[in-house]
Length: 254
Image (cartoon, rainbow, N blue to C red; front, top):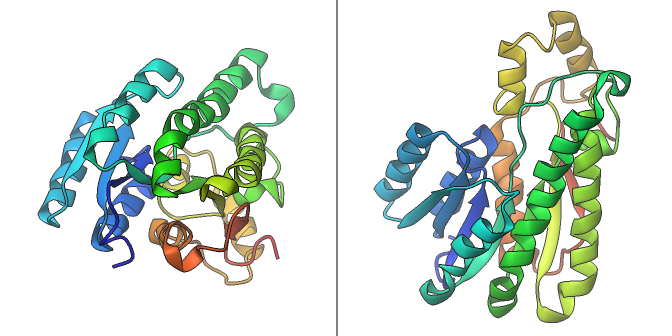
């Protein structure tokens, strides 16, 4: 129950995604009130709210485009009189087609930069005053591909590398206010975005076999493996860990 006695809530962006939903549920299980953002999936958002409510944790959700700095700021500031925000977890990332960088158009690359990099910065910028008040924690979900690059994954790895650098910068600059910042880099999972890419045929069976052969543990991960790492880094048990990138990849980047 790492978060049971903390004032305020944990805010998870992209809460209806496979990883985001697992994180929301584990935070609630460990005692935190949880708020989350989503983009358009109202049905999944309501299901998640009901699930969190069944655990006895109040929750709030908002459909937001994180490229809209004013909208995310207004939502975050609504928690100022509710105890604030003790943890910000950023999981937003669209399903990304696997393609060589030479095939990515500048307009598509710009879309991903705006959503992933600017979306993260907009959210952190709005949340920092509340996180300072709580001496809170930021955890960004990025990708292990920033350490070991899989061919055709540049549209995902490039923006997330920038997010990781922002995490390091925030850790260096906000530590004096008691704010910690870290990231987790999932490897190949059988849930979440990877599950959708597999269902869309982005990965062939040959691709999956090669990926599995590159993982020392010889299995793909689960969304809850990532959630466990996020909740540890957000908790006071990790209160001297900041500015770190922890890959959750079965040894892929070893």
